Length: 312
Image (cartoon, rainbow, N blue to C red; front, side):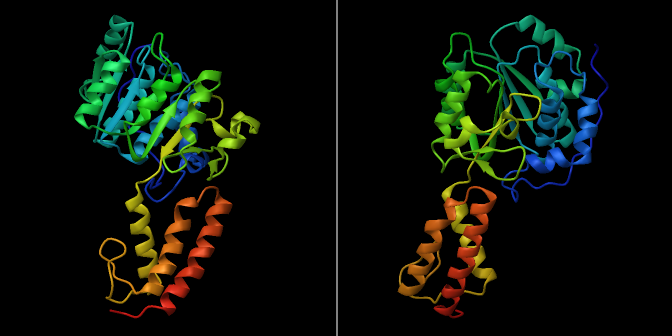
């Protein structure tokens, strides 16, 4: 099938920076069904299910990333999906790393709309060489798609290395999580709950690592596919800013005395004790139920903080 003319598909109004897990909202949107229909049998060279292709497209659309990475492109099918979303955003670049079938991939890309070609950089390197060069450059990606493991590669080592290239708050999408070695590698990096969370597709929370083997695959992967979506947690400074904003909204203005906490805030000893309690529980939010419990506890502590504070 020849490359279709370029067309912008509408995306739902979802702000990933404000939503911990945007996947259920994307799947529930009427625009998702329209996108699925568009990618139902296209591109023919894609190795992913139409549901996964639609989610790839819409995730790029709502995130508006500047840097997107695809590993192990086979016949450039998913590459075209990502490139279409980037061009629709009028923002961003796509790096696609391929290990084999270079002539076939080049021939496929040559048939694309020129705008899709302009935003795509095809990289012919081994996995190890690419990872080393990217780490030296300091480049981080907002969205990374791993289609498979390199020839004679180790899934655990490669996924672990690839996870270092994702920006805080970014997304790591991994295909073929129905394979035992890939699933084990994902579970390994999920052990660091301060860094990574697995997004569930059936509800807005995160999946608990200890229950992955007992959970239905449909609740963890994109329906009809073996695509898992992980999200890197924001850096610690994000929690401090979040706590500071919550305190400000609750009119708890710490007094100017003693040493600053955090990032220029000054508090009394009693204020610091209360705020340290808030800081201790803030990163522990997981599922929706846990998040609700944390919010309730924060509200209680913020009332206490207000009682011990006065406006500057």
